[in-house]
Image (cartoon, rainbow, N blue to C red; front, side, top):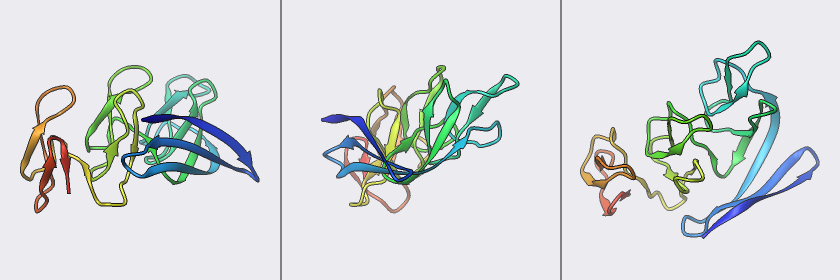
Length: 157
C-alpha cells in the first residue's frame, strides 16, 4: 500500500515517509533546496521567471510547481521525468508520460515516483533490449536488460 508523503523539517533536511512496502523503499531523505532551471534535464518543476518551463536535475524532487523549487534526493524515491529512459511511470504535471531511470521501479502510475530496489529487481521497459517480460502499463511489450531474467510479468532481476 502506498503511503502519503509526511514531511518533517529538521536541521535543513526534510525526512519523508513514502513509497511501497513491497519494494522495501519506505523513507526518503532530501538534501539541499535549489531553484529549478531550463537546462536541468529532470522532472518539470513549474515556470521560470521569464516564462517557459523549468526542471529539476535527474533523480531529484520538485517541491512545488508554483515555487519552481527542487530538492536533492539523498536516498529514496525520486520524481519520474520524460527523458529518464526506463520504465513508464505515469504522466507529468502538464501531461505527457514520464519514466524512471533504467534499472529502477515505478512506485505507481499515479505517483510518478521511482525507486531503486535493494534486492536488484526492477520494472521491465520497452528499450531494455533483453528478454521480453510481458506488457507495459499502457500496452506494448516490455523487456528486461540483457543477461537478466523475467521474474513475473513486468518485473526483472
